Length: 431
Image (cartoon, rainbow, N blue to C red; front, side, top):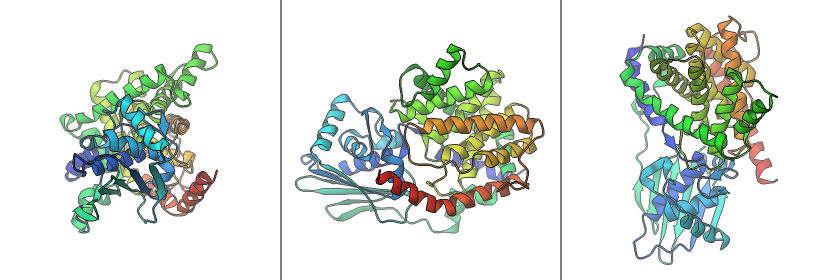
């Protein structure tokens, strides 16, 4: 058992599983805008123009999603409201303190055509540069490679901050403990680590469960979760474990993509991935009356396995991240239902054989449909594995062992699907 990896696992979970208010791509633009606004002297804070430049992937994920508290979608409103009322200290919750008056002022900027958004010619998968102009000054902030990582701050053309490059192999190993780890190590940690060391993951349940109830009790997005509930009430769907997983998981995504002013617990920089890694596990734990320790360990297994799988892939790609996060969820579900590591591995392999290839065509309300589809696959694959059934290594991209199968999935996401990503963005911007 590789207990030497456990401190690094805890660090990466605390880094990659954090609260986020709204879709993290427009939120990163709002954060850059908030930081840029802080550079201006107090007597010169009248905005004459905001210019936003983002990577193609960030444009894809930000152009169609609702920005919390604004009733509007897109990167322009994210930049405007972030500049006017964002709290940079809150990081991915940068918009948590906005008011209706702030929103009206932001809309005034948009109506006066004072906010422009374009695609930057950069190689970074995740990149946002926000430049804010006043009568006498210009402040520019660049965020890249993660949703909160500030690379540079400029005021009137003078660089006031530049992040130090992280090029040493020791830094790489520090930030990615999975270079020397495998799925077995993740399973051992989640199921054997001292409970007090991992109990913090319980906050994922608290935040995403509240978001799920919000989605069921109000009208958000496409109302996928509420649609399941209405049809249970009508008698067209039966209740039970599968329906509950679909209903509760989709509802959380409905609320998040519909602009609810409640944070999600994110995973790997995505609220939907955090929801996908949390809610199926929560529902199964509730269904079988699992105790607190089993819930915590299952959530840790789910979130860390999701990060392990995602660590082999580009941060943003044409592969829907909710599918890989749900592969984390199937780990937690299988273990909760009495499964061992071999059965957990079989369940992950079956999911890769099932839903690989679901595309990411940007963040939007219909993401809740993909989240629920992935959650359904997790339940199906877990139950198959417990009965000794799995997609075998003779079928498609699935290999005999789980780690090779995960790498095959990632090779597809990082290889051929990069061309798919270009085509998706071209379709989206030319509709």
